[in-house]
Image 1 (cartoon, rainbow, N blue to C red):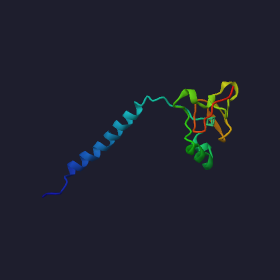
Image 2: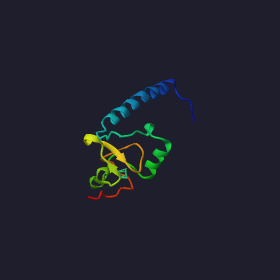
Image 3: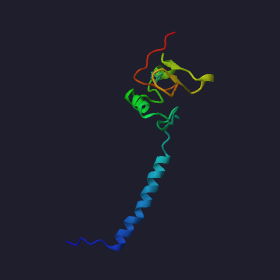
Image 4: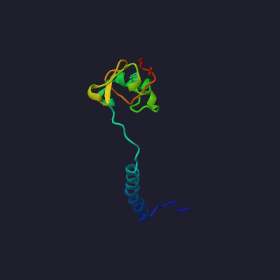
Length: 108
Ligand code: SF4
């Protein structure tokens, strides 16, 4: 059995790598999933705050809009209807449209 690889085959495969990379890039550019801008990126929070948010399953966009931070008793809206506000449980800003496992309905 001949296990040698021809120079032409190696060059052909090497040329295919950039083509595959370009195809993957083009596919990623087609992602039209709406992006939610984070009120506080992980790099702006302490390790413990990131851990707490992760443990509480905090997300910037609630799956159920009826149970977002804006409707939570722990949330204080930002001034002027800002997208980000404060949470009594987390340090740093949270998204008015966000959610975590500690959600509790705001009392009227
Ligand atoms: S406790 Fe959770 S749901 Fe309530 S305001 Fe804070 S992050 Fe939002």
